[in-house]
Length: 476
Image (cartoon, rainbow, N blue to C red):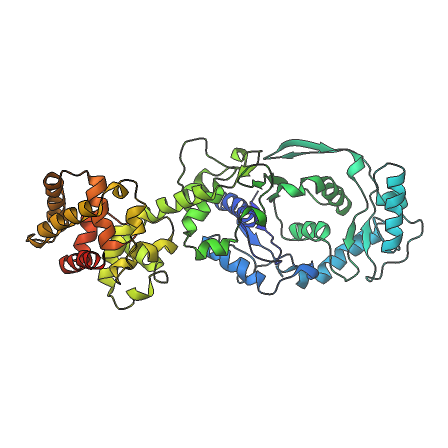
């Protein structure tokens, strides 16, 4: 069997982490099995359609490296790959069911259906549309909703590669809508038709669909179709682990994470490891390693907690893995405006110093601004420092005079010579590195964080370092 998987998002807004994980797992399976990965746009819910959302989905997948073999921008022999362009296909399949006596036009108004619901509630029993199936429904002309006529009321049992063996009784089977009054199919009907026409072998999607699978199975039988492998992925949970992740829990769109300087390698790695592991302690996986090691039977059944701090940690690890040239290319739009007048060689030196400290690319301005412009003196960095706030103004002044004297007499202004000088100052002043080095770092950068002090001072240069020390002294 040639594995054919698919991702079928709806263009109803931004693409979030749950969407992308639903795209990632079938992609990993297809790539591992040398199969085919299909991208299909399910836009039959016109009321929720958002203009531009399709391009956003495609651009996000391309950024992540989740490439597709068939679909928009690629084509393929089973197109169109946009549902709204497949109306005639759905009508033809719907007509097959009508001709077999397995579908009927829905003659009821919404008010009549509501009356049926209220009657069922009064009798304290679940509402089932099939209990009100019309004896002589009108001929279906495409302007009324079309419903499946469930004729085999039975228990269904199926095996989910992730969730295990599952079953559901006849109480969940009902005459659900296949075609809407606007001439477009429902998701319940369209995705089964599309998967059949596109020869999809594995349907991998979120756990929210699991309760509908018995209905899908009844429709597969009515259409005489072979059932593909049906796998449901556990929810991505909110940080507290108590509910499904939502916008109110701070979940951002993948596009926002991209803008914030998250690398595609980190996002791919992070999403793959939410709900899956290879049975080892390994946490960082390259694209190739994920493809090689992925398997559905290693996907956990319980929900995976969304931990943004872990994403940031992972992103920092991936930033460290990049070559300096690669990292520089990716940071082009993140430099502070004051860096525009500096050449590439100098900026690469700066980038090389901060690479090990970056968690996101968006931190670059905060981490590097003082290399390109005069920082604003912020004495709170001294007074808020646990160790420095213990020093009196006179002690601070004495330390700075000692440092300035040593720096002025320093012949070579190199990282090595500066480190020797700083170590010598520890002996001269009798201070600890946490006090002396912190004071020098703050006075010369006025930043909450900076790279190794000797490397920072070497790149700033002797004149600039002494000038900033003098500026602080004169403004006190």
